[in-house]
Length: 392
Ligand SMILES: Cc1ncc(COP(=O)(O)O)c(C=O)c1O
Image (tube, rainbow, N blue to C red; front, side, top):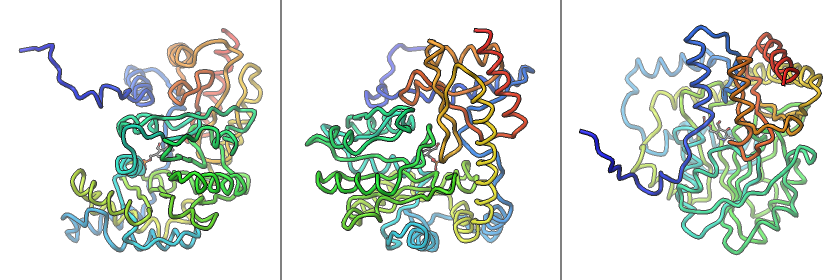
């Protein structure tokens, strides 16, 4: 029996499905039908999880570590995260102020659910990671978007931030290094953001998921550590996915002021409960012993970035921002006078190259290319893009 009556909650009706996943699915379908598709659309490292991390998780599974754990994650992992934050980020968090969740995405979702409500505003810059606006909507709040440009290095200025803050602003979402642009904020810029947020009593969600993938000898700074008192307003989010090539394991965390950690713990205990027990053991191993592997992958990404930038710079009609972090190049296609979705669709159909249209990140004059793929693919894919553009 079919029915036209579909009683979906208005909450989910306001949320757009993920276009990036749709593009990947179409590229996959074309490949299955025999097409030689090159994909620059992936949002994950192409490397496999390092073997020793897998081994630890398998060992724990064999030993029967297969039951519920504390909802906020095992204590050993929260202790290791607390030590990592002190060592690498100059942030002092007690293990009970850290909640381990099913990916940084889940950690961010939790933070927004416990902090935002109807009438609240969350500020972030565009181009943005596509889940921020949808998650703000799911928390019944409003996104206030500060546009940035390639010319300004896709970085928001402190003045623009201050202008965007109203008496309804509850939260600033920062993402450095950023997806989709690869922009990285300097220590000085972050200090200015911190001072503004302190002055205006605005919380800061610092999404540091690409922390370790940073190039040109730049240094990553955690905003929570940069000015006295700002840690009390800051939630630092990070995870296993990008640094350790562990996207499928689904592990992330939020380090928070105490009442926020408590609220997230409670929310999580009634929603997902703990992240997968033996996956937590893998993350623990990654945090303790993963640094040399992270360095190897980072070095490979930097080499590929340089290669991709060099090839793209030869294509006259597109301009790309030289990413300082993450593994994406964000390229301006305004000169082609074609909306980004239409361009990406044609590029996939006619040149068999998958890219993500900038419109999903709030910029319809750009495309995102991931360099988390082999140099061979980069060479062939950029060659195809160049030919395609010459034919337009
Ligand atoms: C900016 C940003 N934040 C958070 C995430 C979520 O990462 P995960 O949930 O895999 O830890 C992603 C993944 O693409 C991202 O690009």
